[in-house]
Structures are given as structure tokens and as C-alpha cells.
Length: 91
Length: 464
Figure 1 (cartoon, rainbow over the protein chains, first blue to last red):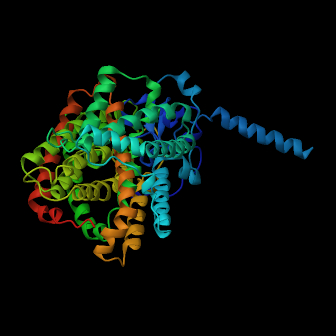
Figure 2: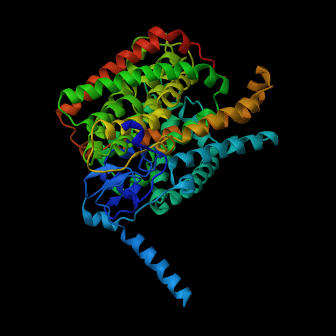
Figure 3: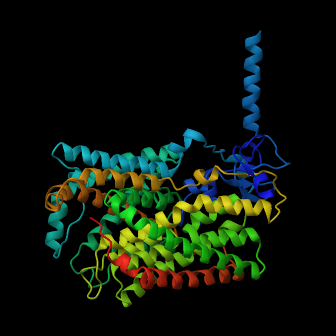
């Protein structure tokens, strides 16, 4: 059944929220979509963590993913920091 | 949106426990329930929070008015101080700057005090000065004619104020009413939501619009306005330019209906409970509908031929809008996301549909509304009607009602102050036609269900 194959309980693998092309800051979303704060809010639960994908030009979920995933720099830096710490400790 | 801007803006990542202090919905729950618990604590100690929950009372002459403010001036300042402290904490946690919020909120508070006071003038109803509508009009004039600096927007948090007000409204509604009227509210709202969505969706498709835009428009008209549009846009992976189209159309029609629905209800002399149900069925956004329902409820007792109470209008509106429509947003998003993946054959992304979004997108303030209702029902339980009116109501319910009215007034004013018509995106003719057809069907079907089919039900709501 195609429908059941399309349902997932938990996300695994790279997701948009860690992608360099994804932006979901609520204040930024409110500024980008004039009128959003008139009768809703960037900080509402209904919006979850959705945001813009500058690569595909889509508004989508942070849990989404695609073949063009590119790791966010801050995430890479964090990981590099952790690696450095591990190698330092191992000395 | 530019790439530079994207890179400069800090990425916000909220997950798991963090949502409890990064979303306005949860803060409305914490504050609303906090107020109810505090009020109950004072009540148990033989006191009341009524000193801080000051509100203007009925007045007829200028001297009466000046006496009210000279006597209670310090209480108003204390209330402003309390709001500033609590709201600044909220603003800090969700990631905004209190430095911008504080002057903006003082501006909102001063205007709200004037509007609240105006609503208590004994001649206000004679001149049709219904506070919610006056607040909205004043806000619209200030933002569209006079103009305000952009940074002042920091204090115009329409959704946060309305959600806080709804949680406090829960504290003034018996839970038995929610149990009794909830199923009818869900049935009525579901019929209208499904029909409206399908009408907008298929009209949009007939006009050649994209599946996802049709779904975003349909959700906006059928479920809960802008919040539903933006939720479904994320769920179906809409094009970046789709949400602003729906936002413009929802805001445009919601503002028209704020004035039109109470006006038509008044012409037809609908009982307040019935009009509230109609507004709850046919308005789009929570704040817009509450402005219309509160405005119409305020006519009870002062306008000949309008039966019922102000509370009945608010109760029937909230039951239909919040219980009947808002809480289903996660289900709508999940189903439409599933259809988008399996039927519309999207190729830009390759992820699957996550069941979790039913909860992630759930409007959490509804939990606060229900808990507040259960709490006060338990507190009030065991009191006779005489005791309730003599002891419980003045010490516990009236101060909560005052704080609720403050929160609603901040919200109604903020709707006007944030609506800048020239900044709204140009929706285009086809989306406009599709959405407008949905609005017409929604209003007619909402009238049939609220007045002709379930009218007897909504006109006899017991709200105490």
C-alpha cells in the first residue's frame, strides 16, 4: 500500500532543519510574510518548525529532506569542535 | 527574501521540551493557568485578586469618570507593571527583545484603557460604540492612515493575547457545558469545514491553480484562517509564494466579516448564542471571530429584540471555533501531506509524512482552555447558586473575567495596528474567486446550521 509506505513515525537521516538552505526563525518568517502576525503568529504551535528552503524555493517542514541537503555551517563547526575535544582528550 | 538575509538570521531550532517555552501557545497555557491558580489561592485565603484585576466600571458623567481614575490610578499602574513584567518574560523566552516590547505594550495598554473605558460609558450602545469594533477601527486608522514605526510591532502580539484570553475564558465556562455542547459544535463545524474546503479546493483547481495553493487556500477558509494556511503550507511543501496569497485573502475577508456578521445578526435579531455559533462557524481567525462575537454579545440587554447574554455569544463562538475547528489542524495537515506525497507526486523532496505532526501542530492553548474549565468547575462545585453569586463570582470569576477582557482588548487593537493593507501580497484574481466562493458557501451553510438546524440548541446554552 503506497499510502502506508509514505507514513513515518520518526524522522531519520538528514533533515531540512540541519540544512544550510533552510531558514525557520519565527521573526524572519513574520517579516517575510507580511500579515502573518495579523491573525496568526510565527511563534504559534500550528506552524511547528516549518521554514523556507532557498534551494527548492519551498515553504516546508523542518523534518523534511531532499537530495540537495547541505549541512549547516554551525552544525559542522559544532561537530568539528566535538571531534577536536575528543582527539584532545585522547592525547 | 535574499540569501544574505537568510544567512544573517540566526537559525531557530525548537524541539522536544524546548517547545514548552519557545511557543506562544504554551505561554498562554502557563500564564492563563497561573492566573487561575493564583486567583484560587487568594480566594481560599479569604481574599481576591480583584485589586490588581482593576477594570473600568459603568459611568455616565465626566466627574464619575475622573473619580474612577483618581481613586484607582495606582491600581491601573500596578496592573500595567504586572503585565509588563510577565509579558517581558514571555517575550524574552520566545526570542524577542523586551527593549522594543515594553514601550510598544505601554502604548497598547493606554489605548486599551481608553477603549475599555469608552465601552463602559452608559451611552456607548446608543452610539454603536462596541469596544471590539472601535478597537479594530482605531487600530486600522492608526496603522493605515497615520502610520507607526515598524519596531512598535513588537507589542502587537494578536495571537498571544487572544490565546491567553481564551484560556482565561475557559476558567469562566463550566466544563459540563463543554461536554454537553462539544459534540454538536464538532458536528456542525466539521460539516462546514469539509464543505468549505472542498468548494475552495475544487474551484481553485477548476481555475487552474496548483494543488498545493488550492489546499492552502482551502485550509485558510475552512479550518482556522492564517494559522491553518501556514500549517498546511508547511505540510504539503507549498511554493514560497503560496502562503502570502492565502494570508491576504484571509485577512481581507476576516476583517469584512468582523463587521458584517454582527450587523446581519443584529438585523435578524438573532439570540446571542445563535449569532456566536454562526460567527464561530463562518469567521476565519480566532481573534477576528472573538471581536465579532464579543461585539454582538455586548448588545444583549441594551438592544431591543436581541435575547440572551454576552457570555452565551462567547461560549457558543468558542465551542464551535476552538473545539469544532481549531483542534483539527494537525489532522488536516497530516491528511493533506499524505495526499501531497501519494497523489500530487511531489518531486522536490523525498521525505515521508510524519504522524507526529498531528500533535506538533495541535494548538496547545486549547489544553489550557480545557484545564482552566475543569479547575473552576471543581472549585465552584458544591456551591449553591446563591453562594456562587454572592461569594465565588465577585471574588474569583469577576477578576478573571476582567483580565480576560484586557487580553481580548489588547488583541482586537493589535489586529488593527498590524493590518497594513498596502503591505499585503496581491492575491491575484483566480485565488480571490476561489476563496470568495468558499466564503459565500461557508456563510450560507453556517447560517443554516447555526440558526435553522441547531438554533434552539445554541440559544439555550447555560453558561454558569
